[in-house]
Length: 632
Image 1 (spheres, rainbow, N blue to C red):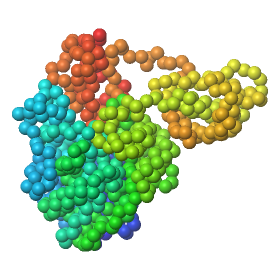
Image 2 (image 1 turned 90 degrees about the vertical axis):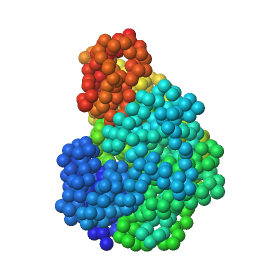
Image 3 (image 1 turned 180 degrees about the horizontal axis):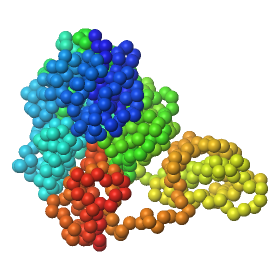
Image 4 (image 1 turned 180 degrees about the vertical axis):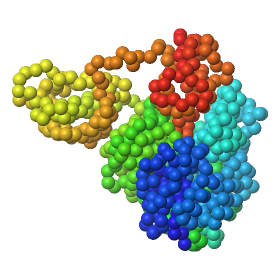
C-alpha cells in the first residue's frame, strides 16, 4: 500500500494527483523549482522539496534529484504526471531501483514506445495499421505535403509541415535542432501529412493480471501548433465498425508491450475513414478528465491501485453522456499564438463545470513553462448540451491577467463546423482562425468602456462623480483589440449624459460595479482595475481594456523598422551568417525565440537592409526588447 506519494511534476497535474491522494488518505510530496517556490501545488502538498534552479533542465528534468527528494521526504512512491520525465524509461528504472513504487508502466514498455519510429515498427509487426514512412533523402514532389516529426517526446516540439520540396532540408535541420534541445535526441522522421484528418485516441488501462480496458475514444482534432486545444469524449460521428477497430488496435498495442497502468493510443483518421497509428503515450493524458466524466471513474485512483497490484474488474464501467474539455492558455491567438506573461489577478468559472488549474489568484505566469492556465470540463447527457454548457461557462468566467485564448474557445465551440461535428479535423484553425479572432463587437466594447469610466469616477469621488454644476464632459480613453474608445460623459442631477450612447441610463454606480439601462434592458457590469488594465465582465462577455494616459510619453517611441521581442524568452539561434549590413527579403527568418516550450520565428517585416542586430544566441530578452532593425 502506498502511504506517501511524490509527484515528479508541477502545476495543474500535480494538484490533480494531490486531490485524489487526499481522498485516498495518501500523504503528498511536491518538488519545485525556484520559479515555483510559491506555486499552488507547493502550498497544497504535505511536504515539498526544492530543486535548485529555474529552467526545467536543472529541475523537473533531473531524475537523480527527484529520487533523492523522495527519500528525503519519506515518500514510498513516485507519480510522474505528464510531460517532463513521465515517458522516460531511465527515470522509471531509477525510481524502482531506489526501492520506490513507480506509478506508471514498466520501463520496458516505456522504452518500446519512446521512439516513434521504433514504435511504428513494433505496431506494424503486431498488425496495427499505420502510415507508411517516407525517406526524407528520397522524397519527391509526389510525396508532398510531408510531416517532419521528432522521434522522441511530443507536444508539437520538433514538428514541421513541408509543402515545398526546396524547404525540406531547412525544416529537417530546424526540427532536429528543436528536438535535440527539447528531448536530448535529434532523431526525426517523415511521413505523409494528411490534410483533413481527425486526431482520435483511445484510453487504455491495464493491470498486472492480464486485464486491459479500453475506455472509449476521444477526439482531439482542434489543435494549434500541433498541440491540442479542445478535446471531447466520445469522439463524435465515428462508424461503429471503425470505433471497434480502434478499440481492438489500442488493446493489441497495450498487450504487445506488456503494458500496465494508464496510457493512450493515438490515431489519425483521414476522411477515408481508415485509421492509422500515430503513437502511444505511456502516461496520463492532459485530456483525461473527459474520459473520467463519461465513464464515472478516477483514472489517477486507478493508476495508484494498479501500481499497488490490484486487479481491474473484468469489464470497465459503461459510458454515459458526453464531455468536452477546453484548455485555457495565456496566449494571443490573433498574434500567431504568442504566449503571454504577467500576473494572473483572478480566475474563476461558474458552478456546474470542472476546473483543473495549476494557478491561483496572484500567480505570476513566467517564461519557463507551458502557458496552460487551466482546463475547463463540461459533462452533459448529449454532445449539444455539453457544447452549450462549456461555451456558456467560459463566456461567464472571470479571467483577469495576461491575454488568453478564452474568446477563441467560446467562438470555436459555437462555430457551426464544431457544433455540428461536420468540421472536426486538424485543419479547423487553418480555415477559421481569421474569423474566430475578429475584433469584438464595438458597441459592446464601448459599453464596457463606459462602465469602466463610471467605475473609475466613483472611485475618485465620494459622490460617485456627480456634479451639482454644469461642467465640461469627463473624458477617458481605453484601448481594446487595437482600437481606441474615447468615453465622454457628464453626470448631473438629471442623470448620465454620455456621447455616443444616447438613451443609456445609469442605474447604479458602486465600487467595482455599474448597472446601465440599455434600450430598456438592465445590464450589470463588474469592473476590476490592476495598474492600467481594466477588466470588465458582464453577461454579454468580458473585455480587457487598457487605460491610456492623456499625454503619451514620447520616450516610448522606437526607431523605424525596429523588431521588438513579442514575448519574454531566449534567443536560441540567429540565421546562419546574418550580419549587419545584409540585404534581407520580406518574410526571411532572422532569429528564433524560445518561450514556454515553443520556438517562435522572427522574420523580416519588409525587404530592406539589416542596419542593426541587437541580440545573439543564448541572450534572454523581455517583452519589447529591440532585436533588430530593418531599414527599407
